[in-house]
Length: 603
Image (cartoon, rainbow, N blue to C red; front, side, top):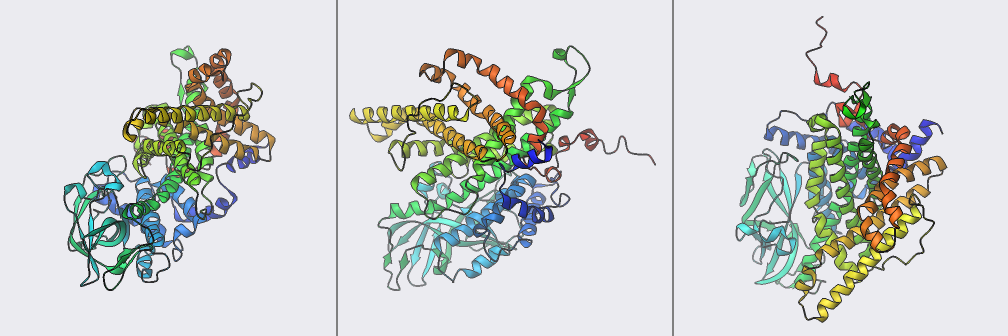
């Protein structure tokens, strides 16, 4: 099969046809010169550059229709933003997704917010989301900030009652910018708590914070440099129209009404915004996973060694070593799996997602984040000392993966939430008991049988243990407290089964048999490595024989040997814009990037 045809077939696993149509526009916006990795800047200059880049991108897109409603544009742009500048990625999604999203979500059908959307569209003001607070473990369920309705003026008085209610960590400390926040607060009308609502709150103009808004800059994290701050409110008056009231309203006589029957139900509605975090994180993290894997694989072909295990023979590229192949081809495998998972929900947003679809969304976000954390760390380590060179981007991308482990609920919490809903049977049926196919561990049908059976049996065990604990009279906290490990194992098994289903669907759809075979072999590295990590369980459950379990390491080595001739094609088919990433080690002559003066032409 011709190289170009093979690459196009493999690239279709990463991007759909619409991406090709967007590519020229992306190249025009993301000039490598304008988006070169910042180096040696003071924090304030670094933060200013982030927002200059935000405006640069927004000015070159048609934002008269919010980008959230142009998903075919938004998601490719998000990929390139993540690759170019992880800090900008964070600011970009907070502005265009969560801030704009809150206005669209909870102000739907209103024209008195058009000016707010227009200001955000033009980046005349930069948006931020202020939900979590310092106290109570940053739980959105324990928000203490209050918005007290004043019937005399039809305004809300926004107040931070104490240090535990201070908003953290919004990135709003950069001076000289107008900032608008979406602030979650308890609505109090006539002394009664009506649950959490979102409010549009001007935080600062170009001269400084607005009256009553206290912005205290915090240290800029080295792994994701942004203008982090704590924010508190001292009697800030918010106009009635800035209340994102959804279905609620307050009549002229002060009577409060809401289609939702109680404050607890209303408070849960504020979390609807979190789906934007999950979608955005999946797309951005899949992008940096692809870039890390592709850069490291290319470098391993150009990095030579003649160490002890080579018998001090002529230098050879490190990619010849099986341990490097296991790491780097494993990274390639994970990158393709992450890309296929992210692609699976980057199309039009489904209307009225079911509970099961929402669980799949956040489960895949958690799975992609774990892949990103693992791949960025492994490829950095596999690239030797140059892996620690900031210009090669591994540390930047690893920082983004770490940041999004916590954003939109931590990966562990998402797993536990998934386990809780599955144990209760919310829109969930365990995988059917399928007969095992032929005993070929390279067969995707076998992966599905193994991972599906593990999910089903762990689910059965969790439900049984929860039921026994309740029957013994334990309270709900104690019922779960000793079973969190089992619950997380079951959710992880569910995530792997979801990934296997995505891989099977995508690779079986490839029209070319050679490309499909190569893609399945590559993806088998990730799936079989996960199965190998639990080989003791599979052996004890009678799902693997002792011979199969013992043969897994050798099988993984044979797959690596089969993939080795195609490694560069597999890396380049990940569609990474190497000029934008800017990593010197992605190129054969990488050493020249580090020696600008020593070998300069004296003439």
